[in-house]
Length: 343
Image (cartoon, rainbow, N blue to C red; front, side):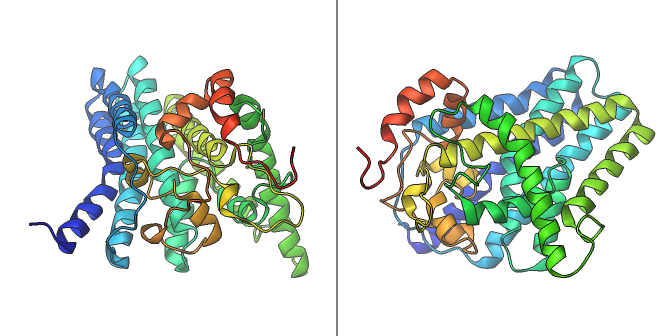
């Protein structure tokens, strides 16, 4: 006979499934050979499972803040281990020839799905050390400025001023080329404006974007000096795939859901899904409307909104659909809610 404690235990276990690809990456980075394809197989299995599982919109049994944080710490630890075992595997020769790039891609995809998703949750926390851990996760993929830009995204989401909101009819490829430099510039100038208000040097070391970019650059130089060009190249490839994963998710989250000037943020400005695999593996990121309405709310407390437009599949499957723009437009455009007064 199942009761609240059984449901609670199963829910906690569910949040750990997102660690699977990272754990496999750690093992295969230290093993080398054809095993380096295993993380890609795990991700494919996750996408298939997401396609086959049902949606579940109802509220879930409560999870303690301590257990919720343990999940985040586990994600951060596995993400860190995956990146450093990749670098070690290349430097030691365990990873060689094409297996270097298989491992780098697999590790990078995990860095996007697990590392950055975990960082996204951490940078919203009130604890300074948890926010710092989120910044560490981002530094490992050369995307530390996301900590600043994401807060601006929350303020501007859905408007034309938000580079992280994809516009209707904009393909994922144009979006990525537009959003990556625009997000960096917006984060940099936002920090500069903050420092000007404090009469401080706008582009000095107190500017978080300047500081974290310098740290990322120093880390890359260190990798080249200590490990050589192959180690640096592997790191850059994993970072690239992590960043691409993040921006594909950004694309899916808000594509075509524009907010008029002065319009209050509403649930219909974020795409959602309640597919179980997406929910648990992505730490409830798919309940995105509630996250935007309550940014400081822990992921375990996010709820589904009936007014949020729902995707026909989970985030896992939708990221692949987005790579085929004609099919994406055909499937998603008719589902975009119309604004009041729009003909």
